[in-house]
Structures are given as C-alpha cells and as structure tokens.
Length: 204
Image 1 (tube, helix red, strand yellow):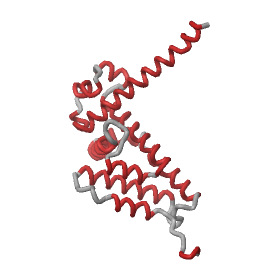
Image 2 (cartoon, rainbow, N blue to C red; image 1 turned 180 degrees about the horizontal axis):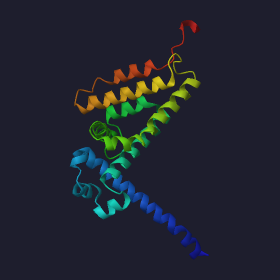
Image 3 (cartoon, rainbow, N blue to C red; image 1 turned 180 degrees about the vertical axis):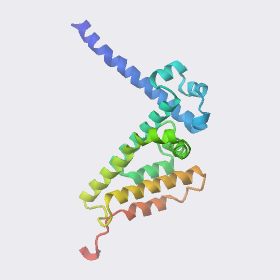
Image 4 (cartoon, helix red, strand yellow; image 1 turned 30 degrees about the vertical axis):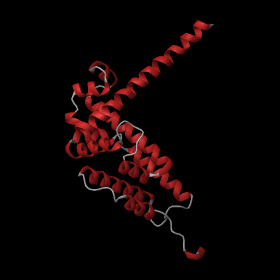
C-alpha cells in the first residue's frame, strides 16, 4: 500500500521540480534581459543569471527567443492578474513605483518588448499571438466596472481599453527615455478619474 502511494506521488514531485526549474530560469532571465537587453543577454550571461547550464536552460526553452517570449508572456499574465483585481492603472502605478514581488520589475521586460516590436517584424508576428491576455483582462475589468455603475457610459469599452493601453505605452516610453517620473502619480489619478462615471450633483 505504502509503495503504491509513493509511486503515485513521484510524478507530482517530478512535475513540481520541473515547474520550479522553469521558474528559476524565468526569474534569472528576467534579471539578465533587464540588465543587458535582448542582444546583450548572451547564453553565457543567461547561464550566470540562472545558475544553470545552457543544456538545462534550453531543455525547457527551444532557443533564446522562445525564452524571451515565455518571459514576456509570463509577465503579461501577472499584469493581467493585477488588472483583474485592481485595473490597468494599478499596473501603471506599479511600473512607476518599482513595486514588484519579482526579482526585477516588469519595466525591463516591457521596455525590451516595445523595442523589439519596433525593430523586429518576426518578433512582432510571434508576440501578436501572445499579447491579447492583457487586453482581454482590461476589457473584462471595464465591463465589470460598467455593470457596477462605476464606469462612464458615454464611451465604448473598446475605446476605453485602447485609451488605457495607449497611456500604458506612453508611460513605458517616458520611463524608457529616463525622463523624470516623480510627479506622474497625479497624472495617473487624472487617467483613473477620466474613465469613471460622474453622477450628477444632488442626486440628479
């Protein structure tokens, strides 16, 4: 009986180990890509950042581009989770403040994604298949806010989604240029206020 239970447990232990190894690679790669950019993140530097051999890294990911896409997709999923709970403006606040539970915040990856979208048509095509997660989460959050009566109803959900995503890209570009960001929190307050429903005075 005990041996059968142990045998049944082995695949789970193995999968847990694989998941942990994959997370180790993604966390190390995030630091490496943030520090050196995509081109500068050589295999040797990826080995140093992940503390794993190239064989171990590319057992999980076919090549460097697949690793970067997986990392960008992973960060997009985490952003989508924040959007689902708190909205896209909160993602912008996190980018602005540098608050993150991860070894390196989302900004480095987001900057590199933006740069490669401008310069690499092949990457643009591959990323297009993976980039809908954040948009979908934003739309769902806005629909929920509208149903709750908190969202302005004179502008379509699609337009509001595009507006917030455009502000996000503008913020990323601003930070990428190294421009001052200390005074941008009030700007995000205005963005948040601009999508809210404003009820009439005296209950009208």
